[in-house]
Image (cartoon, rainbow, N blue to C red):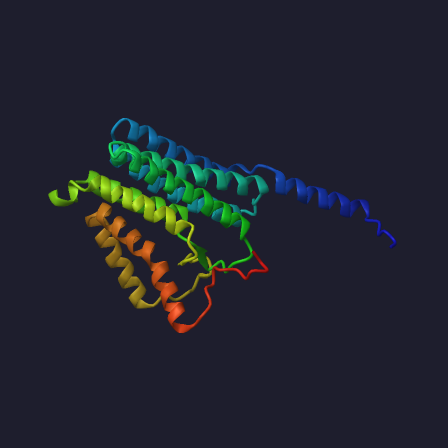
Length: 266
């Protein structure tokens, strides 16, 4: 076949495009770095016994993690480096750090089960992130395949925050290690499941908002302001089981799972 020669102008444009894709953009990656620092600071606080602050820093890390991708898309500064950096930072911030905080908080006196529970969570986050990167463009982006690692971290850290805020009854307090281990194992297993969890990525901006949405948002703000630790834990507990309920609903209706790719696409 005859090879088509490209003009120098086209070659230069293609090389500039490749260089932009490989370049490091300061603004979005600064959010990723800040998210990573918050998680690191949380581990440092946990080692000092300040578990409430440690849990709060993981939630702050979640907020920053949700901003880096949006900033990159708004400023057209997406890059291959940013994608890889964000993935590694997510594994550290929502996989390794929550496992270490949970272990220092309640699992280190639990013997081998404490080690196992923390590792199951950490391994689940690693597998979940690797599968997410491998399935980009394959599954419906409106749903997560399994529990997202930030939501798994919020589930475990929400309980740590709740316990440190003295929101547990004396009866539940004595079972703090058991509950922590159960949440770690549940989050780790759910992250590698095929349950569809709503991602909200298909939601577009609308000009008009129904009144009931405003009312629900106002009630949620009031509840969170009055008791932030309990509100955060309840919200993420509900979200952590929503995927299984939706999967059961799809099974009852005979509808396919939107996050399970066909065999030929895996």
